[in-house]
Length: 325
Ligand code: 13P
Ligand code: SF4
Image (tube, rainbow, N blue to C red; front, top):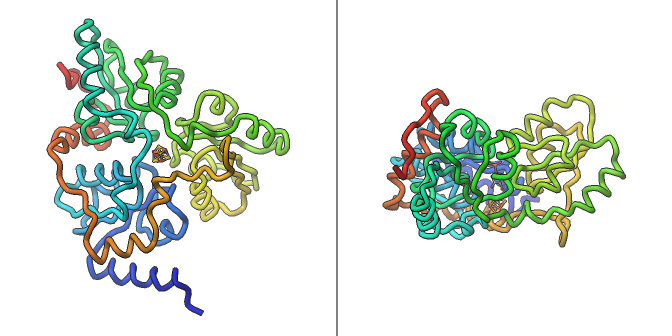
């Protein structure tokens, strides 16, 4: 019997061919979307893939800031999203006008700093920044690209910022933002799981608070987690402290292992509600209608320059002039 999912999948495959489109999907998308994608990855891998795409149409299955990044790095392509409402709590936590005022206050107080923003931010915030980082390149950018004689203002994720301070030894002024998914992992449940599975390895995303990270065997972005798991050849149990769809990717490539999601304080799921807005039906509809589309916005010009030098250029080209000077 042919299911509805099979029907929709067949429609997507036909429309993709008709539009000469490519589908990029983040590891936090539900499995049936990842399965259809031409490329799956973390923010960094998908941004770099988007920059190199030759197809005229990119369908970006992730949240909107990721699709905006794809548009900025490949402006001539049509970038479609299944749902324009797929936001991010980190983006919301840092309005650009508030950041601008804070930067002005720091400068008025004689502080000499560069602004490093996490890619989970609006284009307007990126345009106000000297560097854009992802969980995949943040340590390298902070260590090799931000001149040592500048302070660092890190926005918007206070947990990732605190982790970077600890790993790089660079003190930072931290914005007070957090991810609603990663902030709520339950420490008591994690400790109970570790007692129950003493041989298990705990892997955690650096958006988690310090109390979770200090109990992890490995801390890294989603692609780094995948690589860590890939280095384990013997069947192993992994306790996964990140969005639970990540397990689909791990299971697909490394099925010899057991993956247990670390629960949140109030639920056992840890699904990102923004990522979950995307469905197979919406992927089909956006390919059929060529909408919703990411359109060029005035702040994209400046943000594009910051994104390109941060994500696409080699580390040797260290900046000496901060954006605000
Ligand atoms: P990655 O950069 O590790 O893909 O993470 C993106 C994200 O939104 C994490 O919550
Ligand atoms: Fe944003 Fe958190 Fe969802 Fe990632 S998991 S997109 S940081 S709300």
